[in-house]
Length: 291
Ligand code: BMX
Ligand code: ZN
Image 1 (tube, protein in one colour):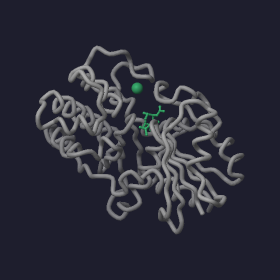
Image 2 (cartoon, protein in one colour):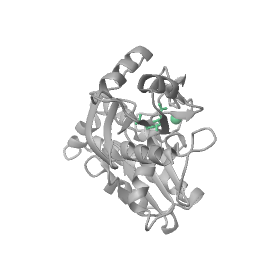
Image 3 (cartoon, protein in one colour):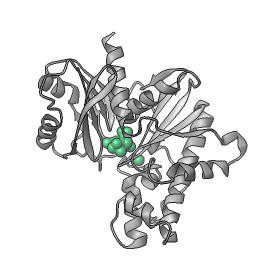
């Protein structure tokens, strides 16, 4: 069996994968120091028997088997953490790793590959992640950074501006406007109360400030998609992540994209595998790596 791990900014999901499908799954909250993290992985990955292969989709960029945060505020101890070696030791089997959004991009490309060869995947979750399929190939990049659209700058400031820079060091990242973390921060500033994105969306009908925060985020996502279209000539943008899949977020992104000149528009679809895109993409990637 393949053990797939999706290690995100807020939670770790694990799945036992057989014949390309998820047969069992567990989830635990992410932990933010090395010891607690390893304990959480042990707990979440216990399916009663050892895996033959571990497939990892991890937030952060992966280089030489090590993982680094781009946004250091998300996971402060990921500054070259030797994730591959640690997991190899723990499970005594091969470990294949991708960035979480790259893995999800691959997972979402597979069911679309008969009609699309160039695709952008964006996850709006704790952070904003991205993955690129170029001419049918997943682009990982020489530094593992390919697709990190959350840290491309956008000209749309968050509604609680001015704010300290993004945890990557830049002031005007997409992630700083449109991630779950950024939505919660803006909700706190404008609505005076900490709330997660689910609560923020539920407030939209009665509070125009909630709608303004979400639409501003959708506008920033649309701008980033249009930028990627001009750079890479992608055929479709796929949206995933808990914020991306929440309520009518995708319709809001489409509406903003429709407001741009025709040349900058492209189809925007929903992640077919939903929250499992990263797990399934990583598992398929690991199988291919096995040859
Ligand atoms: C951040 C960055 C990306 C990741 C994205 C979404 C870190 C730790 N992660 O931009 O590598 O793909 O978030 O990840 O810097 P998630 O944590 O929201 O799942
Ligand atoms: Zn950033």
